[in-house]
Amino acid sequence: MKKLLFIAATLWCTTAAQAQSQGDYQVGEFGITAGAAHYFGDLNSRAGLNRPKPAFGIFFRKQFGNYIGMRIAARYAQVGYADKYSKNEFQQLRNLSFNSNIWELAVQGDFNFFKFVPNDPNYLFTPYVTLGVGVFSYDPYAYLYGKKEFLRPLGTEGQNANYEGRSQYGTMAIAIPFGVGIKYNLTEKVNISFEISNRLTTTDYLDDVSTTYAGIGSFPGGPSGQPSTAQLLQDRSYEIDKNFQFQAGQQRGNSKQKDQYIIAEIGISFNISSYRCPTSY
Image (cartoon, rainbow, N blue to C red):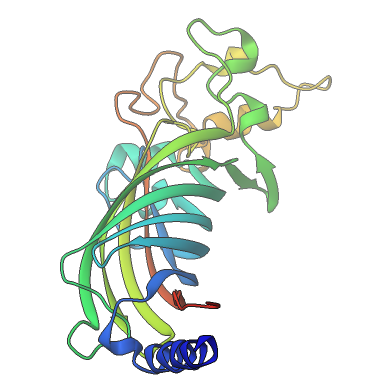
């Protein structure tokens, strides 16, 4: 009798595995993404999308039914912008620029609008929304005479000169990703997706620009009187007009608005399935 029950259970398990499309067996998925990132902030205050840079990621998503998932994702992105791309006369004269590498780790909740069941022809596609929280590292840099110079150590807004109200910013910040996407099941094991998600952040120094100019007096020159690297990078208007110089207290950025960045990415993921079959009697 036990032998017959075991054979019956084995046959049932095999049939269930072959008929996965008739039931919901997906418990999660893991995948990779590739796309483009863009920055919004003091150097790109009009939300221009004309300078995208590469972004890549990996993720694991745990499914809780057909509609809700929880995702942990790690991403790398490059962002950057320059005043020379702006049509605003103030920004053109300000003439600042930056680039930064971003390393992000985030936890996101995903909600499918439609029931999503891999390998079921009735439930292969869904749009979804996502919301989460994460941390990211950044370290803005610029080029001076072709040489890469990291901006944070230079204290370009007077952080190293004990300028009143200025303190050195960190290289870590919090991000709040939110966005929309679509997902389609290609085969029993493979899905493809497209997602656009913006990030609100807790920093206004992603671009090394936030408040006002500290003035040339906050950046002493070298022993021979030559200007220091910090002096040359805190105010680059001299590259546009040699007779002009921003004074201490004049606007450099807008400290009332934090910087943001957005990522658009295509993903491919692989389903993780679970079968609950009897093993012994």
